[in-house]
Length: 187
Image (tube, rainbow, N blue to C red; front, side, top):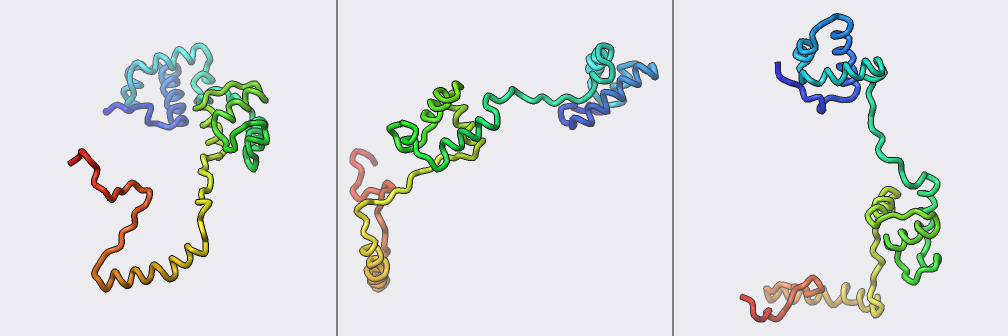
């Protein structure tokens, strides 16, 4: 029989297999190696289960899912962080910079709650609160909406017609990194 990797099984199935195997050994008197061979599991694993059964009884074989470390902030504190940030400006809290950064949140957590987070943990906290990085809306301050609409509605259609007549193509040069002059020193 092929061996079964217990890590691929869910917790309830593993719990059932542990109890079944221990009962077969303790109550029915079967040899541990025979029981594990019939279940398709590693022969040595049952000895750990038997020790746990001797120490704690069947309760020692019950599934236990690790909870992980206790959170540094409770839910009330996490919501307080949300209230600091959403709809507010860091300058309202006495900072010089007008955009929220992880460093500013880190400083506020230390000053107001006495909790020292590293920048990575601040980023994870903000992500868990669904506070994502946002780029400020940028528009050129010289932008003239009337000139833009004139260009879109009149100038560009004329250029497009002229290009079509001449069999030409229209290309736009912008800040995407195109360069009209050849780069010197490269081939």
